[in-house]
Image 1: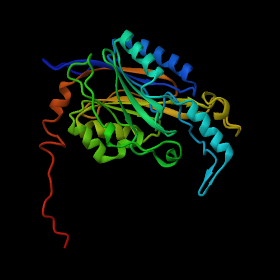
Image 2: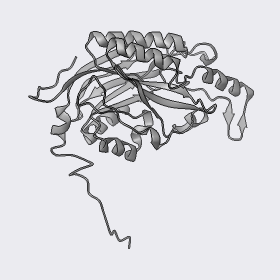
Image 3: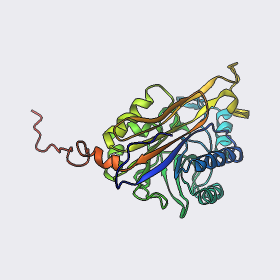
Image 4: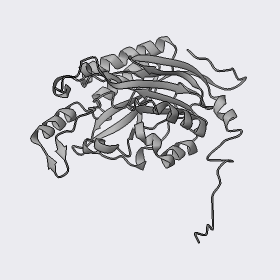
Length: 310
């Protein structure tokens, strides 16, 4: 566990990031989530972040039988299977998570595939669960990336709130899902809400991702907690197991979960090649001290007026 330099009056918190493989089974995945929560509680974690689409799964490399102007019956059946593995938010699974959160005294940020109660649309969603208040909110990914738009609807600005966990005095928590982190105005919105625990559930396991996380931490003068899935071929059962002769142990999503401080320094990770848990102690005073020379929504912001184009 990494420990930052101490500050005389700043709140110090312990947080965790879970690198986990979704099993595409709600029950099995919940069991795995509970194990990670228990493990984080042993390290005195007050907050744990799980990856994008932990419940529901991320069907990487599947086309759902689509081409421009064409959909197949096989693809519709696969979408039906995917929809059956999604959950309502709130719903019975969220109630179970709230009960676990209360018992472990851990605030949970978790990526799920949400099934709309009003329609058949699915959303890539991050849920927030407080150990005292239970389910407190959700954020729907505002812009699914590329082919994700075939299976997920678009969120909107109504779910861009931040949260102050009851067990973490001074903490302001947000969640920005995967490539939403490349949307400058969305980042700016959270910075303007004084976020100091910036969570980034993702499935982006490329080598470029850690640079993005370090940039955001430095730019926003915030702690960044990035949780990525780690999956192999054999984590994709049934209809999700592609019959193209890859080895079962071949990595599909390679991980890379990490924790970064407000000066862009890595406190833990990136973890590769396995599931695992990262814990770190955070001194929230680092966020304030960092804004001494860079506050992108304050003294470092400049608004250009009366610009002549010619």
